[in-house]
Image (tube, rainbow, N blue to C red; front, top):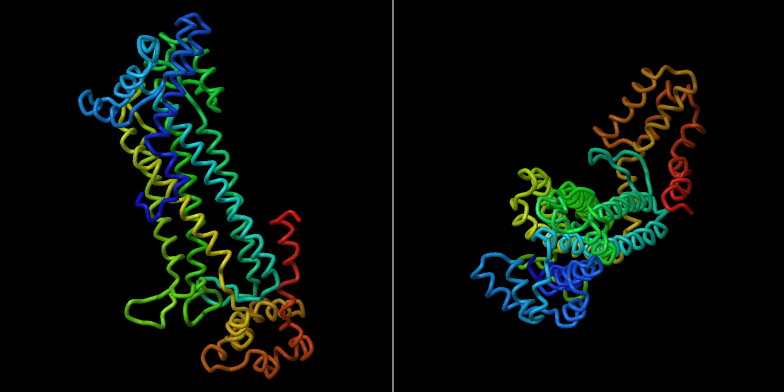
Length: 431
């Protein structure tokens, strides 16, 4: 990822220093377990633990010659440890180190993302309660439908992100899996106890059957969950982009002092954060397909997945981390215009109450087909002639005869549409 979209906390997880430090921890723990089993001398372990270190530039130089990153790493470590280094990597294969390390890094990244989601959920919740009773227009197909509240919109976003948190927590648990099973995963040259010991100390579970690599369905699930979160993020961003349109202007991103919207048009205040999040979501989702394609490897292993993961693991997590933080700030600072919401709601001169009139007619004894015809006939006058819906209904002898003036006027009450807002909030927030 480019620095523009990278937070240092997430970037550190994917830096060589962290990766090699995890590799060294895996190798050292394996030596401790091997010493307990009597495979290597016990007095070698303190030396390995105390002297174990690496030099990244040296690793790069060795890899340029040997064309193998794990061998280059082990050679660098041996230069620090000395003769006892011969006991490091006993019975292990490169995938034991690489896959177990990747699992650690992905759990570390998931922990950052879970913290991001918690922060975002809290911000959405606060704004949802703030606007629980702020009436606005509900739209379907982009067309005015029936009244809702802005708080309900936010409650919907909260519920979706809450589901995403559950998904990510489950994906984190499934990816927190290590494998120290040796060539083709049979434990022929290493005891399963070593795997159990390493995994326990690394906060992982042993892979039940690793085939030399950890099965990539676990990784596919992880990246698909990140893609779902990105899509939910885009759903929010698109709603804000629509609400900020000049002819709507029910909400807009905060426009800070000194900010400029256009190099050519000084009047512009553009939804740049939401648009950026839409682009980020497209980027993050693009990693879903290669992650799925990584599931199908040849026999017990190949490395067709390796190059892909070196890209997508850092990029997807870094991009989503940045995006969730950006979305959190957007929600916290979102400017809301209740007056414009009411103005837009009243723009269609009462048409949003058409369903209530339809139901009232059917309950008064009019057939549904006839009721629909009567309501639609008067509604089209509003669309075509700019008439007032309530006025037209009161002047319609068939409608007025079936309902009466009082009932018609009563059906234009906003409270009818909002009477269950508290119930929905209790369902969403469990309060």
